[in-house]
Image (cartoon, rainbow, N blue to C red; front, top):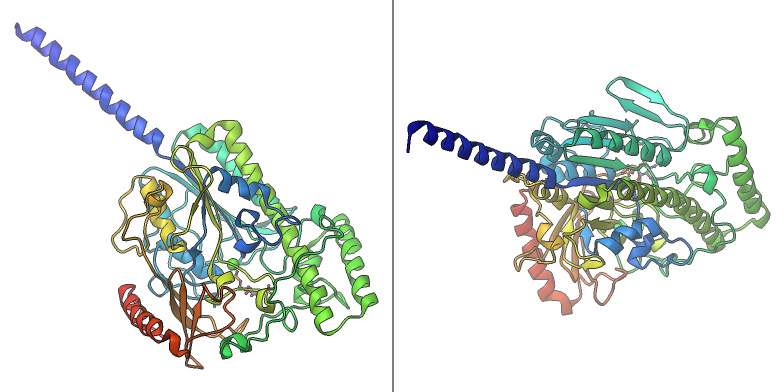
Amino acid sequence: MPMSILKSLTVLLLTVANVCLLTTVSLSQKQRPNIIFIMSDDHGYQVVSAYNSRLKSVAPTPNIDRIARDGMRFDRCLVTNSLCGPSRAVLLTGKYSHLNGFIDNSGKPFDGSQPTFPKLLQQAGYQTAIIGKWHLVSTPTGFNHWEILNEQGQYYNPEFITEKGVHTEEGYVTDLITGKAIDWLKNQQKNGQPFFLMIHHKAPHREWEPALKYLRSFAGVNFPEPSTLFDDYSGRGRAAKEQKMTIASDMKLDADLKIWEDRSGPDYERTRARLNGSQGKIWDAYYDSVKNDFKTKNLSGQDLVRWKYQHYLHDYLSCIKSVDESVGQILDYLKSTGLDKNTIVIYTSDQGFYLGEHGWFDKRFMYEESYRTPLLIEWPGMIRPGAVNKDIVSNLDLAETFLDAAGIRIPADMQGLSLLPLLKGNTPANWRKEHYYHYYEYPVPHAVKKHYGISTSRYVLIHFYYDIDEWELYDLEKDPQELHSVYNDPAYRTVRDDLTKRLTDIRKFYKDESE
Ligand code: SGN
Ligand code: CA
């Protein structure tokens, strides 16, 4: 064969090879999924209707439920430290609090120079963004775009922080966050890179301030009470007895239930005082009626607790109405643009919450309602619609799951597990059988004593330390409401010994030797 033909053939072959290569690259680029991570603040799984909530008929969450219908519902998603900032730091780093350094909300800034999954996604060509609550004191790192609420954030006419500084916007926080998220998504379609978007709601965090349009959405509704509303904590230790998060004593009539005798004080300033004239009229019309009801009924004792419970749930669930609406708007937007086909959507909360169970609001404890959090994931073509997973998973696993989904190598020092096999319906035989927890913030604001512990699918062993040294053990099969610790019950001696040893081992495994 003459040399010139050979050369042309070689060039042709190389060109074909290059085209193939290019096609492969652009195909795999294209196939890398987009990820939308929606996280609310303090949304208890027990009031999400996909979880068969006791409030399903009166306060459903139809849009959040769409993710469960089209994807997977996780029934045992546990957090490592049931508090806002710490949960977010675990999410970003895939490491327990003692290693990522953000153990409580005391104000110490998150060290944003450490490796996080958004940085790795960004390096691999993802566009990354966070919009909404951040609560980690330092400013975000690893994001192409960020617009965060100022500290805890405000519900009405809230302040946002960007690289340019702080500004205030008129409107309701959940609606504003949603609008910003959709605006950002519109720009992503133009640049063709895969994206990762975190939509972090403030709602339904205390003090549960609803959108003005939803103030009367539950008029006449009676919210079913939990059977433990009047728990006396007799089967447990000092930690459950000495906390300060009861509806009876710690829920405030003014800040929490919006009944101010005189309109003043920091709580008033950060809520009602933020409203403008016409907004204020709508608020006053509703909360004046609540105040009148309170005065007219003149309740005390258990009747007063019941009344407070009803109004607490009214405000909390009205906040959820906006969150649910927001989820619907995001899902609709994805569908209308065709983005839904290659986008993973996750809905979760930074931790669980008490909605009157044990007479409480707030979270923090390694007891079911605050320890567990909702987790719903849809991924068209990957997850079988309507799937339910009962394995022990954790917010610790999310960083690795995102990296794995994007085809990025997972750093060896991350401490979670990718959920990818579970999403495909194949739980590995060696999947974790136990989960480790450690909570540190004491005494303010809710006097929940420091504790750590281990849980399996059936048992929870907790060690309350610091100003006390008490152990509790619960058998979730026999006592799902965790009313009677069986730590000193001889019948549980073997279980107790086994779990105590496993707790020592798991603390070593996660490198947590601290107390
Ligand atoms: C505030 C709340 C507490 C809540 C913490 C932490 N009080 O201090 O009730 O436990 O935030 O919540 S409030 O009167 O200011 O609402 S977290 O979600 O940020 O961890
Ligand atoms: Ca929270």
